[in-house]
Image (cartoon, rainbow, N blue to C red):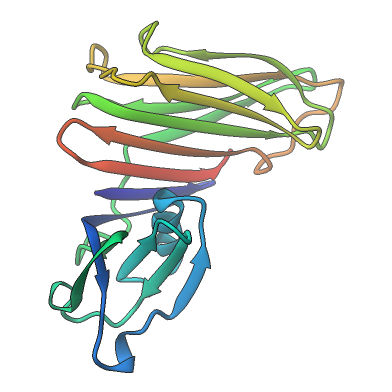
Length: 222
C-alpha cells in the first residue's frame, strides 16, 4: 500500500503493508502508541501516520474510529494480536517520501478558476474516491466539473455548505476502470466575481485502489 500527500510543492509519501483483523499488543510500555487520534476512516488514519515523521506503524479500530500511531515497533509482526475490529499497518522501511502518481494544477482568473488532478494509470482501478474542496472566501460559485474517466463508471456530485464547495467523484459499485489512457484528469470548475482565488485555500484528497491490491492515498492543496 502506497500513501502519498502533496501540500503545495511538498510531496510526502510512503508504502505500508496492511494487516486486517490484527492489532498491536505489547508486553512493555515502549511500544505504546505515541499518539491517538479519532479519524473518519482508515484512509485518514493512514494520512495521520504520513503526517508524523516518526510514525512507523498504525492501528485503526473500526467501531471507535480510534487511530493509534506507533514510533517504536522494532518487531511489528511479532506483536500482533487477532482482533476483528482492528486493521494494522506497517510503514515499509526505506519507502518514505518517494514520488507519487498524482499531480495537480490550477488556473486562476478574476472571474473563473479550475482545480485539476491528474492520475497516472498503469493498473486497472477498482476503487476511486476523489474530493476537491473549494473555499468560498472570495465568493466562489459552482460552475461544473469534468473528468476523463469513462462514462458510466464514475459518479459525480457536489455540495455547497456556505463555506466551501465540495466536489466528489466515486467509482460506481462493481466497476473496474481499465487504463485505456495513461493519465486521467479530474477538474473542479467555479466562478468568481472579480477577485482571483488565493493559492493554497482549495484542497484535495484522492483514494485510489488498483486491481493488484495497492491503495494510494493523496491529500494536499492547490
